[in-house]
Length: 98
Image (cartoon, rainbow, N blue to C red):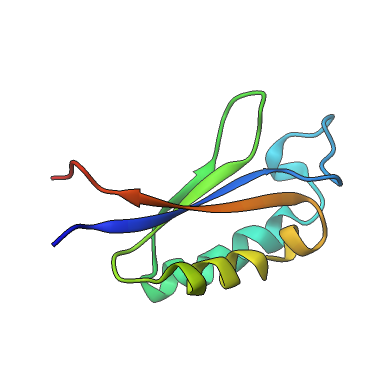
């Protein structure tokens, strides 16, 4: 059976302040709290910000979650709704793992 997961990719939205680091952005704590819900429920495998000048970040779901469910959750993120972040959900085939 193939292990297909979904990757939630975040990029700066129209309300992103280029002058501030990730954790100082207005609304980022609500974004983190939103995804911590899924971490606590065992639905999130990995997540975090990119550490380069392009900003944004990504989250990787656990096995067995559907694209529609993940997309709805990602779009309900307060940081996406406020315009701080843009979001895209992409399917990913886990080709290697321990």
